[in-house]
Image 1 (tube, one colour):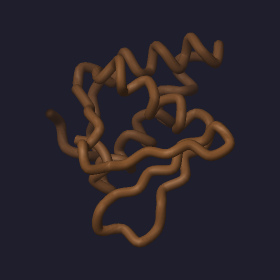
Image 2: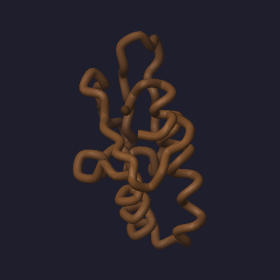
Image 3: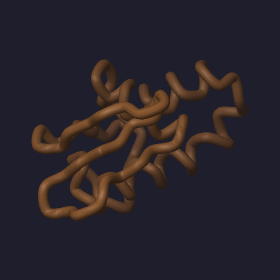
Length: 94
């Protein structure tokens, strides 16, 4: 696996088992040990979190989001990589 801020398309990401996810108004709220505040995900973040149940390769997640939102693939790649990197920094995924 690459460095946490240097994700590559073939990298595999998985949810940490100790992270609890709840939904409020169709948005994911993540609760993790060691944090006093929940992590609230926006619509795309929630979609990516749900997709990680079925896809764990970064490129597969990108393809799924790209297909779902019907946007330019090159536009979503930096956003998704940034989002996944932030989840890794917060130790919500590995």
